[in-house]
Image 1 (spheres, rainbow, N blue to C red):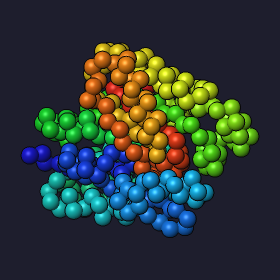
Image 2: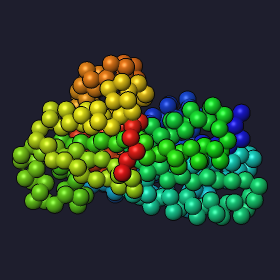
Image 3: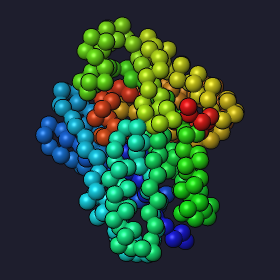
Length: 294
């Protein structure tokens, strides 16, 4: 038995069942849809199909990160049980949630001087964050102490490769991430941006590619270029999508054509309501272990 809790946020975009099966605790972000606030609880309160349909119908969404008080309430029961905590946060390049976690850590370690809370900036997002926390669970189960797991994660977090594409710029325009003019032209020309996450955990547009088939092909090309051992890669692959499972399936098919060792090792998840509030429907993201991001 380990003497610590492994924890993440709901924005790791894994299923509730997956997290429970791996004994990974989680705390939820929040989102607002048509002026009603909901927990980002992986589709429990609102099915994700319903959430994305509301966005397609014009509903406005906003998100809010976990505050200090929520972290205090979440962390303290574990400390009362005599457990230390290793908690990985959604990338600081995307959100300031880590600041709230660090403040809660400082307050609680003063109250419980015999306990330690390790807060880690994952520098990862969506199911890439999930891929990292899943490997952290592997390392925990192999017997790493909390401090050893903390050190291992800091050393290896940038090896999680992230490649995203979207087939609809409407929601990036709506959120102000793409100008109305550029977005209109991009949608008209069927431009599908291919993005990545850099070493600071920031989402970076890399290429403007015309057409869905071409962007899927280029995404697989990036995996060939950056995956550990190239096309001999045999580790886990996570893919997340926002209500476009057919595009995710097409990506899987092309990956399997190029990577003969991956049958049964690719898992498709849904992009949850926090990340999805910003991407909207039509986004597919690919995550794998590879070269360090720079």
